[in-house]
Length: 497
Length: 127
Image (cartoon, rainbow over the protein chains, first blue to last red):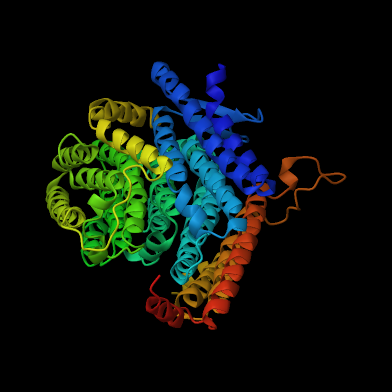
């Protein structure tokens, strides 16, 4: 066992320990502890990812030295390392970039607690990515739900409080469904470790037993995670929550929390139920339908918005729909495309949320499109960052979003019959709608400004300038490495099974 | 029909769990009062716990506590579901606490417990 193999465990423990220590620290110390912890996790993963590439496979990490059917395990593979690295980077940049705004929007005594919640989100994200035990996953789903609720309502205005109440109600319904699914799985197989469950289910599938309960389990997992990700019929809380909470919280919620849930779902498909069983099951169509509906209706919701934050929030609904639809396609190519888009969208959507808030500040603290006219001239760097993010989401070549659209199209073409036609049509329509609302906004940002607004200095806050530049740089360069990343993901998915 | 009823009777625990889940679920969705919603949620959780515990129970065996005489696994019920339920109860308690705290906040702000009128008042606010 090499030292580097401890990285997943160390990262999780680091975030848990700093979550415990942070509440007793003064505000400034809490802030820098949290930022420091996330930077350490990012550095550890930069060390870890090349190791996983050279290892080429995966390994399980025993917790407390209890052997397989009893103990609790972590499992690290190529895909897990990549996702954890990408989401930790998002977490770090979101915390740094949203820091100034947060200090103005949240009551000073509660700012330290905001970072406790950030630490817990980090722990939840890492655990959902690495765990090899179904029940541990459930516990951390709940931790993630509670801490994201707290992040949402950290800025206490009416919208965020009502939204977090609705989020809690829906989210607990989702957890309930997931818990029932886990109970059924345990009933059927007598195991909680992912590999043992899969072996038993594969046996049942070969004998043709328990087909209906397995379908029900898959359906329950899909419904539970869909509720938690804010997929179309369950998205009522989302625009208010992302639109009114502080910018760091919106970025973390849209890019880290929902992505971690989604990754868990894919992991359950591959490692708990077995992808062959899932792909031949009717319940997967539920995911396709939810995804397609979400893609189209999320975009329509975004077009109807009068306020930029809500528009970006609705766009999240639509982009999560892409992920659901292409996993619902039921082919490895589709899953690989969805995983690529997961990384691209996490990096891009957080940048959009974080660049919107300085632009709004420069426009008299208003989020309405009318007041934002010409904001791109008033505050240059966030304007460029927002434009870059929008172009990537629309799918302009060389940016990351373009490659995800290509991979999506390739995967859709490999599908069969009506699924192929539906997905291609939905992709085309949704891209069109995306272009409509994003380009409308970007053009608005660069129209002749209304009189009476002051131009901000080029670098008003060093923190915002630096983090948004780093974000922009990552989003620009991710397109150049698209081929490598998708190869990495494909190998990771092969090792997954 | 008779077969179905006897099936329900032989799996009485599961039947009750499903009924309770239904009651909790409808309470959660149909009532506008936040406190009633929280109660519904708790009933739903309880149903899940009942289902989970009943699956670990084996008729004629005792709780998995080492006592005199019985020292083989064959004497005990399956302890894992009980362990899971224990974790589940802890989660449920903390979630209820958070939701009640949130309800107090909302009541202080809007002086109502009805989520629909809260939403209406919220839409009137600008920020």
